[in-house]
Image (cartoon, rainbow, N blue to C red; front, side):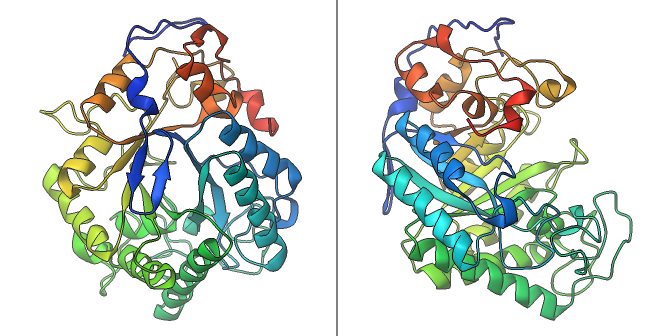
Length: 377
């Protein structure tokens, strides 16, 4: 990937592909720019306030087509280890999210909540519910160590229902769809990943069996929202504790994982990678989103260091991530390798990223620095 090492960037390829409208059923977007979900933890007591409303409105006002919110918590006591992560349940939190939706819609944008349960990445005893044990398919953490007992059928049923209720609430308060977080080693992903799912019942064993928990959640959400409300699922091969992990080592295995999710009702796949330009499998230049689109025929969102000249964790080591050209991204988008492009850190630090790129104002793009995580701007 061609990059620059300064705050300025060169751009020789037309950005037109990035600003074409996109329509899927009832979801109509003014362009292909998606705000990636980024954990912010600025909602004291789980309730998003006016600063959160303003944060999302600024991105919509500046030309982002689709906003995917930060992870929001389903109604389960062990869904998070941070009391400042926003809830997606309870009257006060849902009222806060309704204000976010109204602000984004008034600015011309579209928005979906990312529904979240972190599973065994949560240490036992964490706030806001230290009394609640952390849960996972086999009670194993991401290192594969046994920490708690495996989830019971009652545990599974409770979580499935909580996701479905959140989906119903999202539709009721005016969101444009939902995203299920099935990536990065969180709860849904822990069922998909063989290292954390050692069950021998109907939820474990084969690739098909390991998809069952995700399938039950998708089906329950689909029943809750009806046939025309978009359901997105975010998937990743990598985990937050193991960047080389693979859910599927071959395209064939990936197809086995994806097919049940499509049948259950997924409309769009959000394909998380650390670097969007890296091929997913040997023998092809297709990235993860490209393979998922080819295997399913469904629209895909690509993500991973878009607009940055630094790899995924460089900025967290105190190194700033400058801006990079997006020529390769645009070429792949024009070739229909994927359909939508999620921007994370570049959009977090620069709410006007989309408008600047559309207007060719590349020298005005702001570089990402880690202190941007400490504020809502």
